[in-house]
Length: 258
Image 1: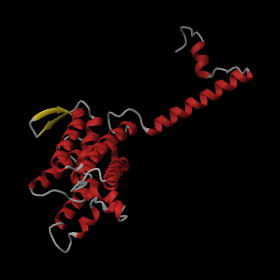
Image 2: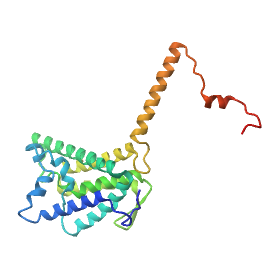
Image 3: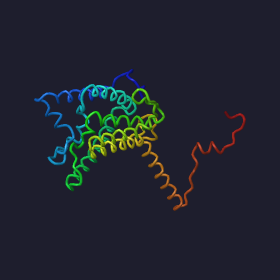
Image 4: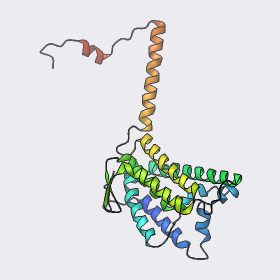
C-alpha cells in the first residue's frame, strides 16, 4: 500500500472521482444545471418514483459547502489513495459499490418503513450520507481495518490508532443524527462502516488482510477432496501408496547422500 500522505503517484480513478465531485458540487450553484446533482443524490424518489439509479450515484455528488468541501476532498484523496493501492482497481470499485449501495438500501428501507407507518417524521432524509461524506466513511473504515495499528492524527493533532477510526466515524455519524434527525442517514453510515470492514477482512486484498477469496475457495476444495478420498479409502479398503516425497522422508540416508 502507498504511503500515508500526498506524495507518490496519484491513481487516475481517484482523480476522476474528485473531479466528478467538484463538478457536481459546482453545478448546484447554477439554476440551469442544479437539476443534475438533484437527480443523482439519494432522495425519497428512489423508492417513491422509481429513481433506483440514485442508490449508486449519490456518493459522486459534491455535498456541503464552503472551504470544508475542499478540505474533505483532501482527506478523501489521502485515504482513497492508500485504499486504492491496497486494493487496486477491481476491488477498489467493488468496495465502493458494495458499501455504498448496501448503505443506501438500508437507509431507503428505514425511511420507507417510517413513512408508511407514520412512526417518525424525517425532515431531510439521507442528508448526512451524501457525496464525499459517504466515500470518506468507506475509505477511512477500509484503511482502519487493514492498518489497525497505524497512527492517524485526528484533526492533525490527536494521535489515534487506525482501528478506533471506525468507532469514531460512528460517533461522528451519531452527532450528525442529533443535529439533523436523519435516522436513515445515520443507519446508512453505520452500515457503510460495517460493510467496508467486512469487505476488507474477507477479501484480504489490502495489506494486513487475512485471506483472499481464492485462497478460501482452494482450501475448501482441497478439504472436500481429501474428505472424499478418506471416505473412499475407508469404504473400499484402499491403501495409499506414498509418493516420492513420502518415500524420501522414510528412507534413512547415509552420510554419503547429500
